[in-house]
Image (cartoon, rainbow, N blue to C red; front, side, top):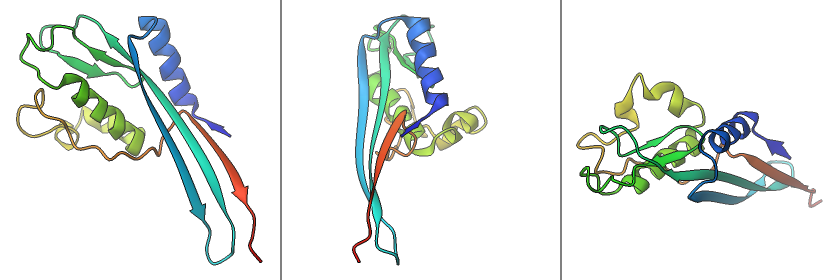
Length: 145
């Protein structure tokens, strides 16, 4: 069993800072790995919850992904933002796929992670791959000799 200390601390921070979430985005992944040329492999199950909060945000923001939580302004549509939740969940999937690379490089090169035109209306590209999860369990499967 593997528990990401970084993800655990981010989740605990979100729960302490914002309280009970208004919703959750929970990702599950089951993976079968085979090891070649020797027979054998592993089955793994990964789980990654991210809380979603609807809170007022500064006038220039419709939503934000803060590592451990997604914040959505309830007035996002009034601000002219159409797909805020979907946009922020794409950032969640970017972080699930690329780990700490996403938050570490976002401030330096946001164009890597955001759509080029009108980012508040578009959904950034994000692979649905769970490489960096909160919990991962795995079971080896033996050789087939």
